[in-house]
Structure formats: C-alpha cells, structure tokens
Image (tube, rainbow, N blue to C red; front, side, top):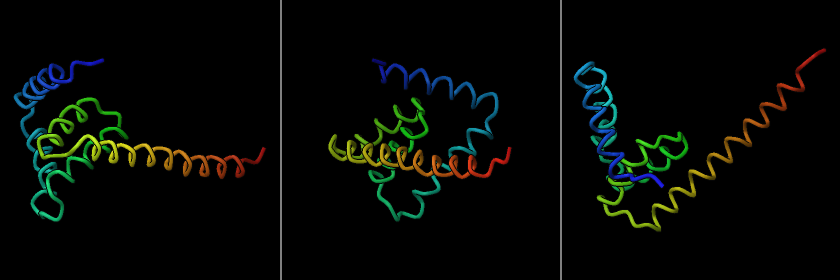
Length: 112
C-alpha cells in the first residue's frame, strides 16, 4: 500500500512548485475550493466527507490523501467515512447504470 503521509507531503511540495510557476492557477483553485465554506450551510466535517467521496469517484489519489487527513481532523469517524465511501460506490454504480441505458439508446439509434 501507499505511504499516504509521505505521498501527501511530496504532493504538496509539487503543488508549491506549480504555484511558483503559475501562481494565479493555484490561487484560483484555492478560491474555488474555499468558496463553499463561506456560506456555512455545511459544517467542515460534512464538506470533507463529501470531498473524500468525490475524490474516490474521480480516482484522485492526491485528493484522497488530503481529504482523508482533513476528514479525520474535522472529527469524522471511520464509520462515517465508510458510509460516505458507500455513497461514492453507489453513485459510481448508478452512473454506470444510467450510462448503460444511454449506450443502449445509442445502439438502438444505429441504422446500418
């Protein structure tokens, strides 16, 4: 398995390198990333649980390591994290189901 702590540290270093080369790109990401917190409709733990589930659905290891740490920091339990990940699994399966229906629709529209 991956050493997530080492990976996260190395990743943050590379993001820092990117910020030096193109600071507005990283700044823009940080603004977008923090925008939801300003409304305060969801607490930080809920936002991190959502972020972790989305990280799984987008298959982003960097996102997983960052949001796993933040979810735990915000007080998420392993059971809460597992439930959020269960939602991610269901959404991936649901998306595959919906796109399977779309694929069948495309197949039915083919005229040879």
